[in-house]
Length: 445
Ligand SMILES: NC(=O)c1ccc[n+]([C@@H]2O[C@H](COP(=O)([O-])OP(=O)(O)OC[C@H]3O[C@@H](n4cnc5c(N)ncnc54)[C@H](O)[C@@H]3O)[C@@H](O)[C@H]2O)c1
Image 1 (cartoon, helix red, strand yellow):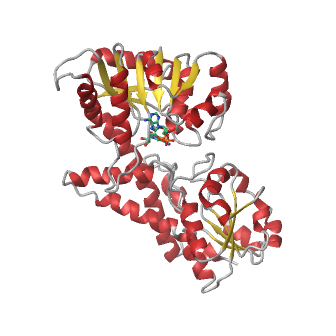
Image 2 (image 1 turned 120 degrees about the horizontal axis):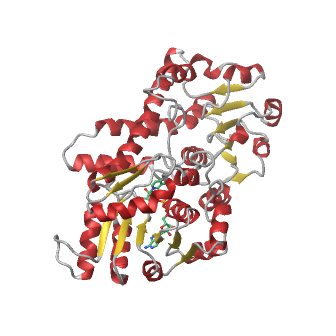
Image 3 (image 1 turned 90 degrees about the horizontal axis):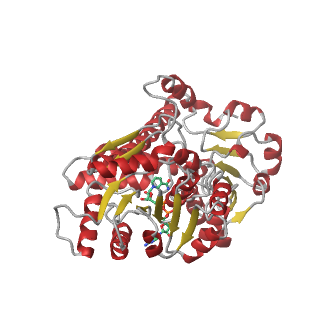
């Protein structure tokens, strides 16, 4: 089948590559000429494991191409996916400006019947708005049947860091669709992804739109819940790693997303929690549960710098080493990353910051220029440091050479923002280690 995907960011690009890999013919459309040029030469603008290899393979196979020309994409496709950004507006709501302007553009270029698939994360009612603006653009009266296009909601559940795997082998595919004929088309499109029993859930459009927010808000809640337990651990002497094991092994609860640490970030959880709060409150529904999730997360992100203030009260010329700038491992994405809160606070206190991350340094350099120092490898940034903050759970940081860490630093203090280490083991090497919710052992020396 033939489709175009408008927006070649994290979601659009991985979706385009995934559909091409399954044998469909895909045109990726983006309005950023530099991105399209890079993609057209077979280079991925983002880091995702395995992505560049599949990008190249499918381009060479003639199933995948990229363009800035939306009309070309629409002309060559039965399905037009919208996968552009939906950032928060000033009031916290999802800004639908780009989604709706792409919908208008698609309408302007329609040459025959098309299925317009909203893949961006959008609040309940957005697919209706897409339908409305397309009708307006085409001069079709509101309501009633028309045969130029159908609008479908098809939210994306991929996780950055394993995006390709998630797209190729989804847990489920959610499709919100009113027209049974279009439901069959969507099932056919997704058939190669669901052969191994992964279900396509067909539902009404509003439910599909809400499902995406419900899933993300629940996962954010799970993280903030365990972080609140971690705060209790720190004041009672309990160890969150024991608590998480004891509770997470209950199958009704589960271990995933039950990690205490310096908070969630990324382009989705913070924005989607905000947007869902806005949706609820604008309907007069109290969203206190999610307001608390946000407040806990903000506190978690501030933990490293609060600890630094506590360990070095009033000290001016600190040297802070950071391992990990990406909001999580296996991605170069720094949007809403916990590292940004730590870096900004350190810079505002006049500290020297040296950082290493396996993939995110280009993005961080774009943001901080020469205001922070970047290392070529993890140990380089430790030279003369007063504290090491481990803020991303990259594998390369899991089993450091503690003797080397200790020798490199001016004072060996480690803030383990992702609970990667056993504080007792580190203490036995003569290093102060502060985890998140590790109880009295947090600062064992
Ligand atoms: N990143 C994730 O992990 C993730 C997961 C699930 C859902 N989502 C949702 O998917 C949507 C896209 O997110 P993303 O992370 O891929 O965003 P992104 O910012 O990485 O990508 C958006 C892309 O759209 C392009 N674009 C903007 N305006 C355009 C236009 N008028 N025409 C063509 N291209 C245009 C941009 O150049 C960019 O390449 C959002 O609604 C997001 O909430 C994201």
